[in-house]
Image: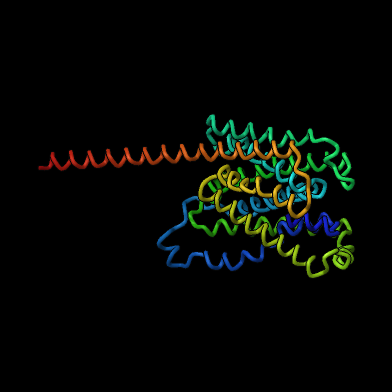
Length: 329
């Protein structure tokens, strides 16, 4: 919503809109100091064997950072050329891409409920291709709409791949049991991404227009700065959240939770941006919600199964203890 507001009120720099998605990393520093284990904690909780070398870690964070910069730019093009409600619904396809990559990279098992969820979310996004030309406003040509659609789908695919790679990095490379690794992952890849985007900002020459863009912003200079700062902070909070869920559970679960905003964003866009909610968008939103519920139900069944298995294991332990006790008597 803040990203769309930036363009609606007179923001034009795609590099600046991309930069704020990564440049909020300084707010990570207090958390890194807070979660860094003390020497006493390190003695009681030694690092897992096979700690990666600095070279491996640098290559990992640099690769993820460059990947993040490219993905953020694709998202920016999509947000600039599409209504925010359409954009958010297309972003639901990232769950399908993430499941596909998780199958190959993270040994994710597929169940009928997951398959159903992926099919529905794929149809939900594809359905938006068939919107009538009347949906396009005078400010958005058909060619820009297509570019925005393609960029958003590509960004969603890249995001899904990045989540799977992040999970793989936690499991196979970093192998840390400390939550500090979540803030390290968030910080370093955003630092690299910010450097790459800044290079693009200066190389493109858009930095020369930032001052004029700020003065010409419809809501004023203060609103312009507040929008960029708010966007930067919101993106960092989101990043820590999804990386933390990958660390604790899985990339696919993290992605499912992030899709909770799907039914909210189109409604907010209707209220604040006066966007149209036609039948195609409503159908797309319903399919996306159905796909999300299907996946959540899958996790509910898995949770019940795990609890039942744990109960059986405890019961077996109790029986074995009783038998051992009888034998000793």
